[in-house]
Length: 303
Image 1 (tube, rainbow, N blue to C red):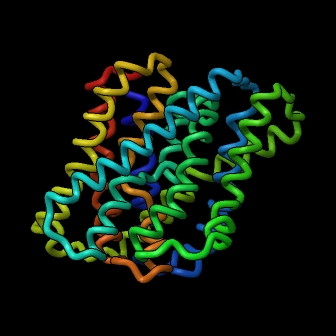
Image 2 (tube, helix red, strand yellow):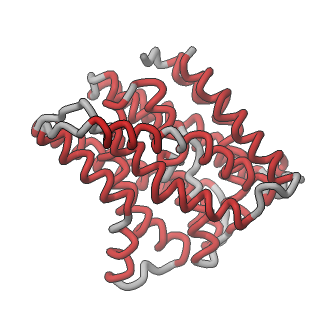
């Protein structure tokens, strides 16, 4: 199976990153540099690669935007409703809500989409990522820090290179512009850095996770069940009734089924959130997603 093979490859790079961190080859400074390289160079190139040789019509673009809006609205509502099942302090509850609503679409989802569906899926994914960025810097910050900050700060964070890359990718595909061969090859080569580097950084971050007692934490186990099984299953049962484009349905599946986003941990550090909970949730969902994603992919007969 393509997805299982891809997940095993990603698992290998995570294990490599963890081993390098354990040996102090990959320290915090190195991870910070690699994260900058991924966020500002490799991942934007991966997003841009979705526009190469692909075209999206006005109606198709409008449908994708509408689906993305409804998709994230449903995820946020679900995270607000599901979290009431647990008795949590405000700070802890806010962290769980963010980890339920936002998955690791950028670092993990895009490499999977590229391997499974090709560059066309990256074009649809770019639409989802534009909305992801808007919400993570508004709703996400509010839930982690209890405040959004000034309008200028939110706009400044939202207008990042990932958003620009997504917008340019959609514009190129919408206009039918032919990307020159040299530029196309450069973009493709840079985009190939995303999967191995991002997984190595995620693997290195596992060194900070306090694994002792993780599987005795009932709230954490309940959250993992919701994030990796309940939400993807319910979401796909609903989406399969309305979404008939197999590639777009695959994008929805990957967005739902990937583990909690690493952005949650980064924001927890920046805004004095519950970083320990974030590390545990992201670490555990990332490892278990190697099993749950291929399983659900088979159950829903995705292609």
